[in-house]
Length: 115
Image (cartoon, rainbow, N blue to C red; front, side, top):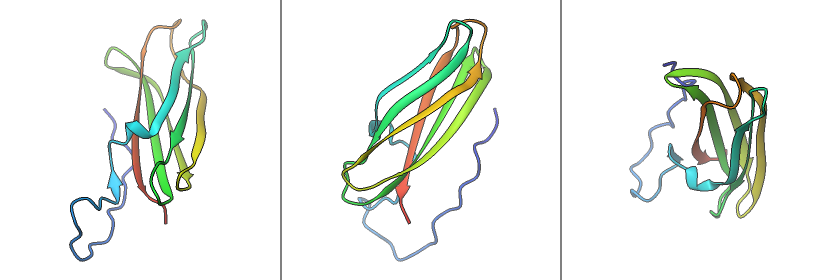
């Protein structure tokens, strides 16, 4: 399994309250109404809406992978900054190819404060 691109850690600053988390690796709740499906010829397309319900601009990263068993057939990485209280459409077309429509598509969403 390949490692995702390395992310630089935020600089160490004075301790903050546990509720002040600048980066979350599990922000799947921000991704709404998403679909990920293959056409009959095995071309995979992902679509979804990122919703920022916070009061700060946030930068979301959506990683999508299509697997058949343990083998990755294709993947995409989408980065989108969404302003406070707004939403943004995201998509990746033909990012994976399988034989027919077999396969599993799983998105993973992380979020950090926009700079």
